[in-house]
Image (cartoon, rainbow, N blue to C red):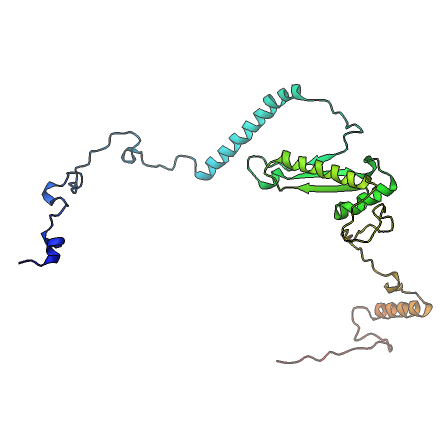
Length: 267
């Protein structure tokens, strides 16, 4: 009657459907009747809003009003809250001779920025108490961190916290000072005396790109005009001729007057 494949797995038309009949569906799935929605009685419903009579302030007017309120709030803080900060003021104490490291950072108010964890260290060579040989060696070790005058600048932003970057810079300065003050330098694959102070090596300042100001050569300037007697006489005679012609230069009795005609092209 049925083959073996129907005995193992019955056909789909013999299985009982798992979906519910339409007559047994829930009432929530059925379509609601028109007009079956209850009428809202809330006073904030859109049906109860009064008709706009153009008797209120416009949107730009409200923006001006809110801006004035914000300015007043800052003025109140300036008058009543800022004077209270005077009790937290501290007198300025200049750094001592031991405090030679100057740290700088950037702070962004109201937002997080990756640069606010960056630390910048500045130190002067005159504050390190180094000998001329040690100072020269320190310049060679710092390379491009030297500004060419007396200051060395270092920066670090490899760590996620500001304290870690500052600690790294402090340790870096300690290692550089230790290497500059060391009597012997370990030279790898270099045939050089380990006790050499590197005094014969000049400090590389190629990273200092100073802006060159190009000035106009004085020999290229135009020489001033020299007033000669002939030029002054010619100018005076020209002015006298024009004055003699008056308002009617054509009928003027002047044989030296020259009339120049300009041809006009007819289009």
